[in-house]
Length: 327
Image 1 (cartoon, rainbow, N blue to C red):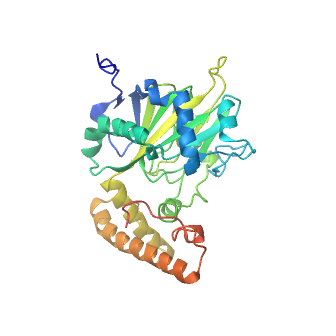
Image 2: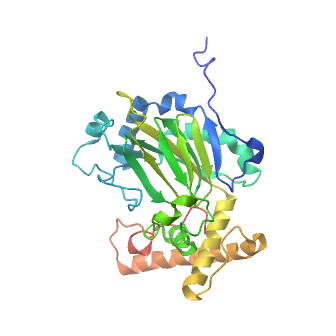
Image 3: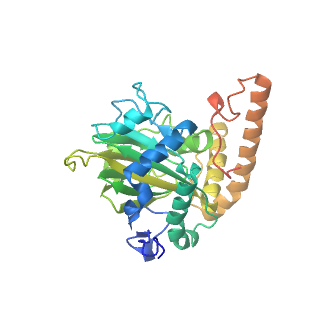
């Protein structure tokens, strides 16, 4: 008999399928927390595979939700990965596994997550691409600082408990339009910081295994894991963000590119993406041209400026690479 014949199908679903929209924050449920590849021993093996690729991330002690979201490719206290894994249940431990799709079995697993929701996504946002995964393993008390992402995000709690705080993507008190544009175009979170006054506007999701949340591109978010649920040796919180781009995120990125140029050089206050459909349709191709011109200019400056060969043209003080497909 096939040993997988009676295997449990793993799925994720919105609590309100008929009301689901890719443009709104939505509660999810899933059973991926029971998938063999999401158990801690398998995640330790995944970390060992990602470490040589510099896709394991570590943070310095004392990080808060208001801290800059900085992380390093090596432990900051001199330990090696095996020592970190051996002590992952110690208070305040924190390890992130970035771009897990680099490992084929996890790329297939991310495909399972997206494929189960593909009909709901593509009725509003066709053209899914660049599906990526980010796993966060921590022992409370621990946090992930306030930040925004370019991609749409299916966030799922796999083990332990964690509270996700997420703001509507149109909340300009949480993050200004100018700072969103700087992030989209130049990939800088320098000015994306938690403002205590905006906490009251966040949606808070106290999440355990099987809980999840969908939130759209540029929705500000952060997490915290407290100690009140810890019992005995059950003290590790694990969550995953399954992120993806679509034709809609590409169009919005191009509009942000156009808006940033208007704001910086013409001192205008352009309309935020998603508020006027036809205006976005007009701006997007112009944003594409501006983005392409900017990238070519940066490459030329890099070449003629004689920057060090190990710097990619889009990095350093020039700003990082634009989002996939945005130009």
